Length: 170
Image (tube, helix red, strand yellow):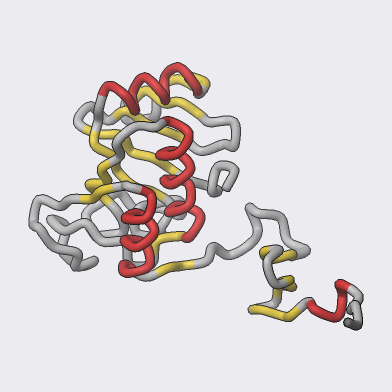
């Protein structure tokens, strides 16, 4: 069997180098890199595999309907971060908000794939408050906790509004 040098098995993928089984190598930092977007079907498959549930008040997934819970155009890192939270906390996770219209706008918004809403529960609340660092109140008065990887969990009273800048150690 002939052994190939590692550089000969690297492939160019969307401007980034990818080695089979090794992920993607880029020259840009994580903050500068454009997020990888996934479909609703891909996200639900990932969540199902991890035991994460989701629900919507409208029992639908239409991104243009604010009563639906959609994952269309969710950042891959956001889905992965939810999986990391599920695995690390051991808590039941139910997502009630994704990329559907009706949330606040902005660069790091639900619409742009950076945020999800989680049902509040004792387990996830205790995990967030005992594992992450309290960083004070958000502009709207919601108390916030920051993970070691920089992701932010805001307690909006009826649910957790979670901002995932990255996958949180996936």
